[in-house]
Image (tube, rainbow, N blue to C red; front, side, top):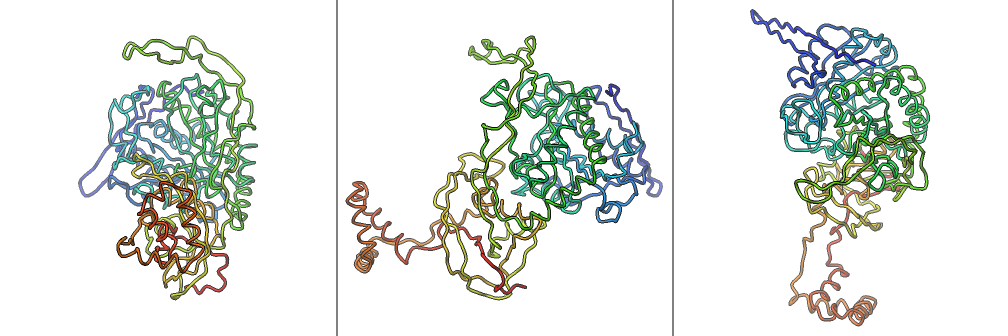
Length: 586
């Protein structure tokens, strides 16, 4: 196990006329320090200038106005993923400081990049079959907001960034919403490089236990079977073994079952709002690595470094098999018909793992005078516990041949385009028979969550209707690599659908109304002309005493069951199309 910190002195010389700029920076994690943003970028600039195998590329802007960087290491000095040599390699993408107060991945990635480029510990051999892509700092605004007081429960470093970005967004909740420039720039990077492996580096903020590092593999239940089988059966077990050999034994992320890890650990469900949940929609094998907040900072850096090395070593050694299973998943995703929108933990299925923890105790708080639960490090235990990592489908849907999106919903269309979704447009105005949802019920959060008031408990009904559409409206076929993303975002009951995140809220407004004094005679005529409506109305009055006393409720009942009631109220605007053969598209 490496115990001595890497100390690198970089000299960056930039000549512009008679002006020279020299920046010297060092990795100092052994002394509980992490570099500033400018120091991080200076180090990567130096490495890119010194090594032909490295390049620092910018993609778009972030919410600070600064660009999002990508540091690429390629053995042939070719920095295009489409080049003949790179296209046969497996691409590993590492994302750092999505929560800027958790910078261990920043230091670990610098150490990792330096090790590969200078062939420390023979790391350069892994470039034979891999291309390394590192996002040095994702939440630049959060990283610039440094303080020793941002992380009350975290042991170092001396200064750390803030959890939110420059607009106070938690970026690890924004991958479907794409409310931030950071996410838009990430889409550009992800679409271009289409990584086989994705790693997001984090630090925990929860339970106490002896392990320095824990792992959240993307939830295997929602992966394509070939990818899930390979990740769970081959890759994960070997990564755990490799990490144990480094001296940093790894355990699944400690999300306790029923409040105590002695009852078991629950596999984290990384919905598409999260980085790994989003990337895995495209059959990327994805991980969130979590170092433990209470361990010394240098240990957190080194454990993360060893994980990056382990993943790269495994990927390089197994590049052909990883490519095969991802290719199989990609082809079959294009023809997939049934999708799970929501999942439920399956407590009847579990693995048994060995877990080392601390007994919990209770003491009286000197602050509140109340009982306080704590972990007693003087009382360690080793126990076999269940690991509940399986989920079962809670709600499923059969995808249509295509979805139709009226062009006025440009916020949705723009996000689909950013996610590399292929779309066609209607060639002329036309009337189509389509399937439409009505939002029958939903609950809206009473507090802001990641800048929005998301909906939950969404209930829908479906009808077949003839609706007028117009030249330029969008057709999104479900025969493409982005199928998982398409269905999860456009089906309103998806765990992170666009409806959940408020993109279609205008349909929840009633626009047309009536005046009782003028509607009374119309209501009478409606009842006389519609015996079934009259019978239902009278039955409701006889059975519902409150309804019988409420004139407005009675008028509403008749109005809502009349031709005057607006069909667009709560009608979800994205339609489902069974076949597209007779639709003229541009």
